[in-house]
Structures are given as C-alpha cells and as structure tokens.
Length: 327
Ligand code: G3H
Ligand code: 13P
Ligand code: ZN
Image 1: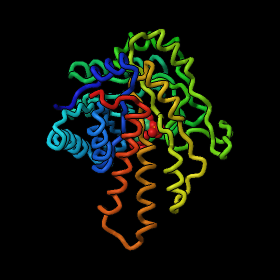
Image 2: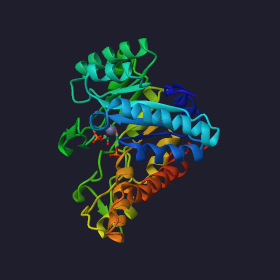
Image 3: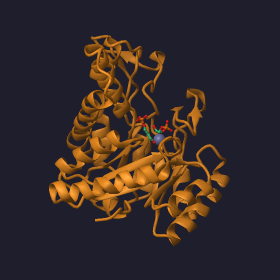
Image 4: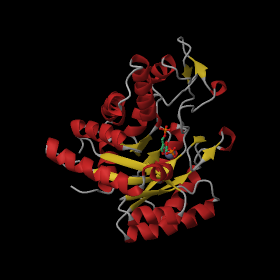
C-alpha cells in the first residue's frame, strides 16, 4: 500500500458514523507512536504536517519516515496501513504546490483570514492544481481562536462558520472537505477561565460546541465531509504529570471527548489532534527527567514518550473517533 487520499476514508466514515484522526507529526517518535497505534487498532490514518513541522524536520525526512512506517506495518504486522499525508494550514498556493509536488496526497488551504471572495479565489487556485495531480483539498470557513505558527487568532477575532456561506464556497472552489468553526480552538488553553464554569473538582468546564451550526451546515451540504480543527481534549492526567514534574500549565483546558464522539457520529469525518500528543510527550519526558536525574541517553526518555503517544492515540481511535477496525 502506498500513500492514499482521504476520499475513500471520508466516504466510509460518513456512512459509518465515525471520524478519521488527523494527527500532527514532527519527528520519528511521534510518527512511530501514532502509526503503531493505528496498526494495532487497524485504523485508517491521516498524518498531517504543518508549515512549522516542515521547517523543523524538512519535507524529505518526514516523507521518508512515513514511508518507513508503511513498510513497518507490512513487515511487522502484515497490514496494509492506509495513510493520507496532509498539509495542515497551508497559507499560500506556493506552499500547497510544493507539498503536492513532494508527494502529499492532501492539502489544506486555510484562507479563513481572507475575505470570503479572496478565500474562494485562493482555494479555487489550489483545488485546480491539486485535482490535476490527484490530490484532495480541505478549505476553511470561520475562524478558530488559538495559536499555531501560521495563524494567531485572538478570542475576539474568532468567528463561527456562517452556514449561509457554505454552499457557495464549496460550489465555487470545488474543495473535497470543509473545516468549520463551531467552538473548538487550537492549543492547550482553548478557553479563558471567564468563558468556562468549574466542576466540583475545580476543573474548568468549557462552553459546549455549537452542534446547531454543524447541523445547519450538514443540511446545506448533504453527504459532504466536515473537518474539526482544535479538537484536543487536554487530558488532565498529562497536565498533572507536567505540573508535578516542574512544568507550569495552570488551567489548560480542552474539548470534552463525549462531544467529539458525538461530532464523529455526524458529518464530521476528520478530527485534528496535536496538543494532546504534545502533552503526552512533554509529561512523559518531564517525569522521566525528575525520576532519573542522572540519565542522559535520549533513547531512555524518548521511549516512554513514544509509548504514551501510542496509548493516547489508541484511546482516541477506539473511544473518541470510533475508527478502530475500519482500515
Ligand atoms: O493547528 C496547528 C497544529 O497544532 C500545528 O501546530 O503550527 O505549531 O506545528 P504548529
Ligand atoms: P489541537 O491544538 O486542539 O490539538 O488542534 C490541532 C489542529 O487543529 C491542527 O490543525
Ligand atoms: Zn488546525
């Protein structure tokens, strides 16, 4: 099996009432943790690369590591692991073109910070080039709050997707999937304390996702795959592990997993998760350093980090996305 597009994955996910996990990758241990989980759970997979990840690790390294994961799946488990390699938050035509020319099977063009008309124009340009090369495209309408290296959106500048814009956007651009803003947010601090209530344990409870907007979008685009960004749940176990081992992440809060499970049963076919893996990796390494202050071999502290990434991805595939056994 080589790298595949998400077309078939989304069709099956839509009909089957589950979503595909799109996990961000930056290095070998992250790729191994995610793909080992997908192999064990027989789950289709999207590995996504941000422009920052591409700058950090370089395109060729990431492609070769992903190809190695496909070979490993075949050799170690006799399993054809379907992997879609996706550009996360592409912001220019040139970046999308470079990823398409370099072997990605899917790109996102994030024109959500442009006017509606300019977003359509830019997205259309990427779709024409991508489709000519057998590559699929994700567009975005609405703006999520939060920080990524390409986009930094304050809570005031965030805006929900307007359902009355989606049909025109999809028809004029020809995109294959659409990311919408219904209250998710990037990073580990998705909401301020003022936006949340607190439960009996004093943990912040975020405002619920706007399922009414999702429903309205689905009515206007029947059968069309929807994408949710900013969908980490910020597991409190890992936040605690970080804070108990020298870290400082007070009031980190994410999207409750039951709400993501509900979204996965609907038209949402792709759910993006990055921060949860970062928390798993950072918590594991911090804990290891505190417990073994005399160790200095990177393999020693990266091993539990990779194992915890694998565990959290398995949990997402089985309990949140519902895509285990669907490959
Ligand atoms: O949504 C963005 C992803 O979490 C990637 O983050 O741009 O820092 O690599 P990054
Ligand atoms: P999180 O920060 O919630 O993991 O979102 C990741 C994402 O949307 C990548 O595009
Ligand atoms: Zn995102």
